[in-house]
Length: 207
Image: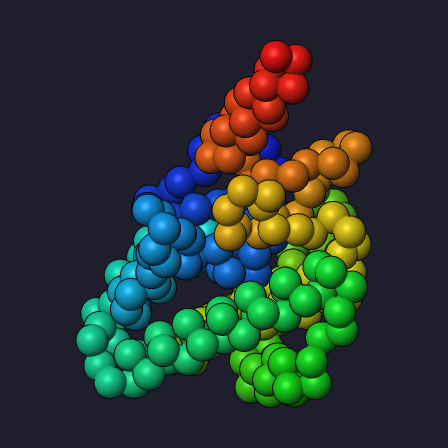
């Protein structure tokens, strides 16, 4: 997953500060001007996010757009994907604070993982074979594959103490810093503002 992303928080109109696919997915409804901003407005928007997240290649996105476009099935899939995002947001918030993942969320993810599994293939790295995860989108619902897989990996392998919501905004991230004390989504978006606020508070205390 992404590690050094502080120098580019926005990519093609989407935020990437989470260091995990599922967290970047949850972050597609940020707050701007005090109001939620929906970045996944339709099926086309979801495809563009998948491309920006490097989950789909441009040619794949163009092909899916031509095949499904504004069909009712694609729009139903888009609505279901947004519903999954909000469910995962609630689970991540609870999990970050020590809560357990609700059975309903586990059941939902298990259904998605069963219906749309991540696949494994072998590839050669010099003379060493490596196992590589991959997925193929043949229908709109297959877009659930990397989202459900990333959520399962997050909840089962990542230290929850390293996953948190920004101290200043609604974005979530996995802290990859050495000390593990990062409090903001990124230096560019919120880190500098927090440091300025802390400095101003210290100045007021010394007056």
